[in-house]
Each structure stands twice: as C-alpha cells, then as structure tokens.
Image 1 (cartoon, rainbow, N blue to C red):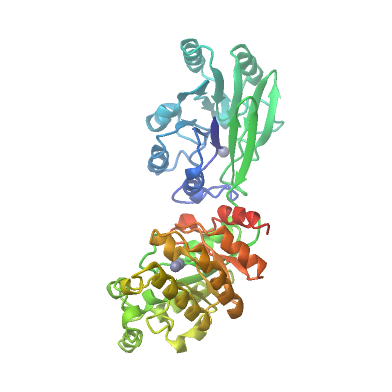
Image 2: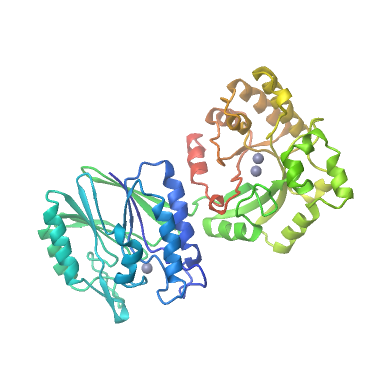
Length: 473
Ligand SMILES: [Zn+2]
Ligand SMILES: [Zn+2]
Ligand SMILES: [Zn+2]
C-alpha cells in the first residue's frame, strides 16, 4: 500500500498570513503540484492532516475549501483522508466539506480521522463522541490494521509554551495501544518529526507543505514502512532556459510576474522568457495557419503595419526590472531556411531557442522525406545561430511517430559543430535518454527548459533532475 502524506497547507487565496514563512497564497498550488507529480505513481491513499486554510475568520474560508475540494474530488480512484486543524473551520462546518474523507478501508487497513475540539489558546481536546464512534467502527471491522489521523501530536511530547500536543495525550496513547493502532499520523508541528515508535505504535508528524522546502512524503507500507521524503523546492540551483508568457497564443495562465514569483519560491536562479517569435509577429489565425512558413515576407508586412508585438514584449520585460529573468525568443525556420525573426530585432534578445514544430505535409510524404527535412530544419536553425535546440525530437513524438534513432548521430554532429546546447524538455514529452547520452559523450552542453505554458510547470524540475541522474551528471 502506498500513501501520500501532506499537511498544513494554510491556504489563503486573498490576503497574506500573519506568519511570513507560510506561503499561504500558494497553499492550493502546493497541493496541485504534489498531485501533478504523483499522477504516474500508483498511490492508493492520500492523507492531509489538517490546517487546510490559514485563517478560519477570513470571509473567503468556505470559498477556499471549495477550491481545495475541487482538487481532491478529482482523485476519486484513491482513498482520501482529511482532518481538520486548529486553523480550520470547526468540526460541524468542516464536515460539510470534507466529511466524506473521515474514514476508509483499504485492503487490510482501516483509516480513521479524529475531529478533535479546539478551545481558547489553541488547546486541543479529544471529543468523547469521536472515541465512541471509533470504537464502534473498529468492532464492525475486526482484524484490520488501524491507522489514525489527527492534527495535533499524541506522541512524542513537544516541550513548548504552545500546545502542540493534544490534552491527555498519554491517555490517548494507551487507548491506541489497547485498540491495536498500528500508525498514528499528525501535522500541526510545522517542522515535522521523523517516524518514531512507542509500544509498537508508529507515530509520524508531517511537516507543513507551506514552509520551505515544501515537504511531502510517500509511505510504502508492507511488512515494514518505507519512507520516501520529497520536496517541491529544487535542491540544485537551476536555470530555466525556456518559458512562455502572457504573449503566447498557446499560453495557459503564465505571465512574467507570476513566473518570477514562482521561480523565487521553488529555487530557480534564472528564467529566460522565450516566447514563440512567430506568435509575436503574426495574428493567431496566421500563425496557426503557418503563414510564417509559407509566406515569410509576412513578418516585415506586420512590422510595417505596426501589427507585430515584439516591442510590447520587450517593454513588458523591461518593466519587470528583475535580475532573475532574461529575454529570448523561441524561433522556427521558414520554407527558405530562415528564422522567424526580423534580423535587426535579434539584438534585443539574450538567447534564441530554436525549434522544429512544423513541416508541411508535402515534405512528409514518406518517412525518408520527413527525416530529411527535419534534419534540414535543424541544420538551418543552427546555421542561423540559435543558442539552444529546444525539445530536440518532439516533432516525431507529436506526430505519433517513433523517434528515428538513426538521426541522433547527425543531430549531435550539427549541434557540436554549431556549439549549440541541447534542451531537456518535459513539456508533454519525454526526452530521449540515448540521444542525451550521446550529447554528453560529445561534450554538448545540456540545459533545462520547462517550456512552461502553465504556472504549475514553472520551477518544476523533479523529472529533469532524475533525468540528469540517469545520465550520471
Ligand atoms: Zn499549521
Ligand atoms: Zn516549442
Ligand atoms: Zn516552447
């Protein structure tokens, strides 16, 4: 059985937390990012142990719950357990939103979430009815291994003026012992605590996901508990060479300010905005009809008619005044092998990321033809002095054609001669490990490009870092 554990989102969609370490504004996004990461992992159970919101007196508290609920509702193939914390709405109200996540059975395991009571000064006390309800449930489900979830700590005891532990915690521990509890999960103590055991009961305290480095956990429970701790913050100092903006027609919710904010939070040292040049010169209609390819003169026409958006793009970037960001473009080639760039504009940009997105159908009449024109495009990009080849073979991936490995060698040679970097890019695509191994052997520089069109992609480099490990870098 595989569990995902996270806690203390402290979400607050509007306004900030009274405690600056809590990135409350991002509470919901942290949850979304974790869910996005585990999408290909077989997780059976998800546990969130309280403080979903930061401020239960905030008038948007219920709206914020609705947003959180929307995210967890999409996970209905998994068992979900959510408990209220001292920052949440009181039990009766909390139940209206998350009551269905109070109890679950998965295989040999029975999960029970305690709704504890809170009093003045965040004093936490177990509720008598809850104890009775728990007893009833375990009698109805004999011979299950029991996992309990509550916000406050039962064990170990935290020495502090602030009440991290629940009242009568020793009594509760004894009660757990009598009732064969196997594992007890809590949150509340934002630093978190390692797994400990007392009288054969495991206790685990999940750190808060809203404080750096934004940790969450995967538990594999078999004959023993295997713990895998993860964090949303990148440990290495990363440069993102490929990020889209509000100027992109295919952009979802990215914009320059929001991207920079996330880069800061998730540990990206520098980000390059590289909007599709063709989209900056052309209207959406003309771009999506590939007029930049078939009628390259359209770029200058647009400029003459003052219809292109290059200037706006540059002005917007300048207004950010951020040393964390650089400005570039994602360029393509036209039918003559020239870049989708008016030559005198080049000086405005620090980097050019070159891509093969499109070849006309008549150039793809056979596999051989397609491969020939693909290579021609790469050659032309490099001849025209791009800095980075973006998503090197995604063209084939998008066409649902197996990547022709026979081209690797040729592309490596072109990149090497042109001194062009190869981009690792996971945007709707899996980079080809064998190609990148060849790049490493030939000392071709490898770089990261998130190719973010959506804010959830910004600063999200866990797959990239794993990929580097596979390359022994
Ligand atoms: Zn908390
Ligand atoms: Zn692209
Ligand atoms: Zn792109």
